[in-house]
Length: 602
Image (cartoon, rainbow, N blue to C red; front, side, top):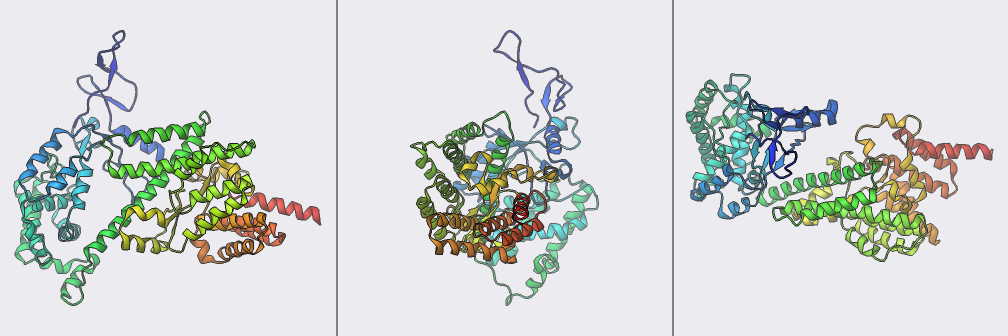
């Protein structure tokens, strides 16, 4: 699809838009008629500049990792005619259901930077993608249809490619999914049962043969699009058609040779060794994976917003947070905002509100001013981002304000909620979920299958910006100024976003705050319980391995040793921390301070 040309306003008229006829901006391209268009190559260029050597391009995706696809897109205000006609065509098929079609009408479409290969105007062409409708269709599949798609993908990967001789030609997973959709649309639901799985697979293969015979693979939703065009030549289409016909005539014995997941061996072992998983368990597992990925995006979004505001020397962080929250809240009023978007926005707003209210409290503590009357309402609105992090920041504020009993009360609540089933999560870009450590979280997700309850099983790292430092114990301030000498030059792009903040895992920070609070209250036995709990974490390699900011945790333990009067043990702790992270570690400051103190004492 060729986009509308860029426009500007005539000089002197102020009302009549006129097309731009010239530009020096490399992100725009002039066509043969003299119209200026925003180029899809501009998106690639900007991504390459931002990501540098890490830039990876795959179709319209510009990413830094082979495990992730990031596609920049423009949201369509209304559904294009190419999409609207699909709803009429679907009225007479077996699938999708009317309920699914009604929900699909609420899904927006996007324009993505992907022109037709070989087109003379490829650089100014953008492709319509109804990806949210496609996702809705995938969620509506029953287990037999999902198994069909998995088998088709296995055949595509292991068998189909053998019969495509041209290097530049390919038969894709999207072609498999399209064949499944068309087969579902024209096949009675009574066929899609467990006992007729093989029949369903053959029906899908016959749909693919039909596409190959007519030399066209129509897009299931977007009318007039041929998915074979430019991707599968006539010779390869004929070769693949003959191969698939041979597989069907051979009674699908090809399935016994599939290597993926040892499927061939498992089929030969029927009926004794194959035990199908209940659909509800598989569905819950999929929901859990999607929820985990969504929380990763939440955390990265919050980190990115805070980093952008903190690095802008001309902007006030507090004002910037207020503007960001207002923009996000205005999006909730848009009738086209989906429930997924609403959940996303609500979480981001709560997280940013937590930072905003903490900055307010920090300023009041710094200048010895009373807290505003509405501060507690603001705190209550920002507490339920996860199990612990926001509440620990509230307890930390009480401690710094000198309200030790209030701090102890909040810490007791966090201690009760932060049990062994809670998964620690980091939003600094340090592997947000450690797969080998997330068993309790996964088990809970599979058993409950409810995304609404996931915040009760996650504990994010506790983060203090420099603007919040008076809500953090003074010892933690050194974490905000951890660079020594040329340490800053040895930070990765990701580390530069968060290393000027204090970041610490929730569970050890709970113990550290408990130690400080009960020390101030004179409750020695509770103080020592917290100390020994922190000591157990530091002395156990397994427990340290589960943490994301292990060097900061060891530093906190060293501070507790100092307060206990054991300077040598504290020095040993700081040395241990430096072995874990020699550079950009506040332990450098603490070690120098202690060594200077010991030298003066001697």
